Length: 323
Image (cartoon, rainbow, N blue to C red; front, side):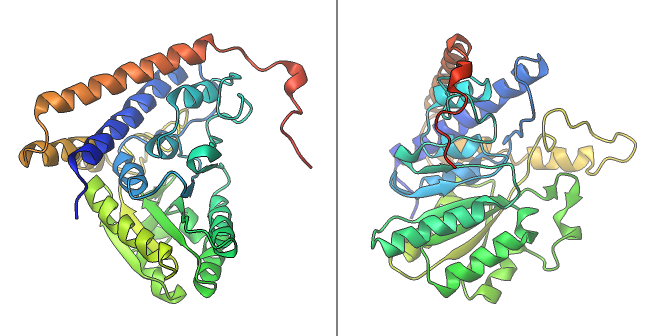
C-alpha cells in the first residue's frame, strides 16, 4: 500500500535534497574548492529515498563510495554532510573522512567506504547483533552491480541466510561498474536471480520509481523484522553523470552512448515522483515547487555552514582513533 501524503511529500523533499546537494558538489568540485574524488548520485535518488522510507530511525544502513544520497535519504544532516566533504570540523566525521565516509549512529547510518563491497559484511554484522541482542531493528546495505561480484558480498548473503539474519541486501544496479557493463560481468540476467542460490527471496524493482522501491523494501523489512531472514533486492537504475568527478570519458570509445543516457534521463526519478503525486491529486504542482525551493534553500545554507566551519586542528589528528 502506498504511503500517506506526508510520507510521499517527504520522499519528494529528500530526493530534491539529494539532487541539489549533488549539483552543488559538482559545482564546488569543478571550481577546485572540493578536493579529491566524488561520485554523484544523480539519477538514483528514488532508490535510497524509497528504501529508507520503509525503515525506522533505529534501523541501520550502510553504503558505498556513491553514498551522499543514502544518509540524506535516512534523514541525515546536510550541514554535517557538506562540511565533511570540505574537510571541516563541523562534518560528520569532523572533517577526517571526506566524501566516502559519512556516519551518524543516532539515526542508524553506520557509514560508507570506498572499498567495493566492504559495507556488506558490516551490515550483515549489524543484523547479527540485532538477533543476538533480541532487538527488532533491521539492517540494510546498498551496493552496486560491480560489488555484487565480490566475494565479501556472496559470503555475507550465504551467512545471512544460513543464520536467518534480519538484513536487506539492496543492489543499486546502475548498469556500469565504472565503465564495465554488468551484462559483461554478471552471468545471469539480473543480480536478483542469484537469490535462490542463497535460499532467500530475490526481487527486481524499477529503481526510478520511489514508491515501487518503498513497497518492495517494506515487504523485505517486515519479513526481516518477523524473523524470516534476508532478502536480495535489485533496483534497476542509472547514474546520469560519469562514475566519478574528475574521471574523463574516453571520447574515442565511450562506454555508453549519448542516446542511452538521454533515454534514461527521460525517466528522471524526481519527475516521475512528482507526476505520480500530481496525477493522483495527492499534491499540486505549486506544492511540489515549494518542496524544491525548501530543499534548494537548505543546501545553500549547508554550503554556507561548511564554508564558515573551521578546519580541524593538527593536534586533533589522532583523536577518535583506536587500534
